Amino acid sequence: MSVRLFSLRERGEIRASSFQKKMYITDQLLRSLSLACQLEGHTGCVNCLEWSQNGRMLASGSDDFTLRLWNPFTYQQLLCHRTGHTQNIFSVKFIPDTTDLIVATGAADSVVRVHDLKHKELVRAYHCHTNRVKRLAVLPLAPYLLFSSGEDGTVRSFDLRQPHTCSPGSDCSNVLINLNSESIKGAGQNSKV
Image (cartoon, rainbow, N blue to C red; front, side, top):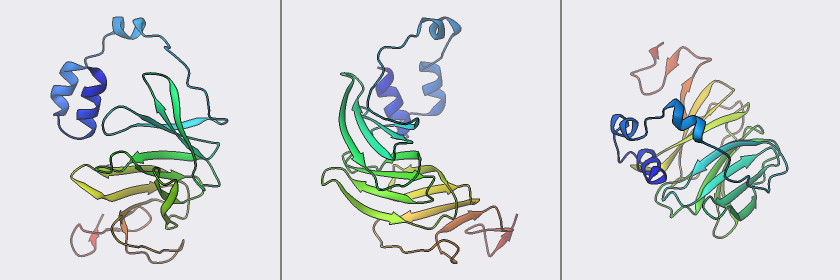
């Protein structure tokens, strides 16, 4: 039941207040929790976990530069995917409405990569950030949009339907927020912060 609730919350199909009421955590519950199983496979620290849209798979990203898919109920590794990243992976996201076959990763090499796991190929690589990519986000109602934030102080958007090329340090049109600037795109004509 709880996996289903988490899945509904992730997709925005259940209100936060309703989720909190159903998933109220008490001290007694916390004390009763224990390790069911340790998933073996990564050779470096695991930095991120992400549930699939249907709640049947768990993705992990690691310091070993790989993305792994797991069946969290049978404790089996389903896939080990070499991402092409050259530094630690800090974020992984399933792209909505792709039957959990398209996954994005962000890493310390400043690159956002989009992977087709069915065909085991790279779909896109975005080289826009100038420092580590720390978080990725998606919108269930706009499955073609991917957002990234990095230690370069920017939040960027990518339309997965369109090709995009960018080189670090260039004036890229996908910057939504730049903490190194005094304006926020989309908040009015060069609105001051």
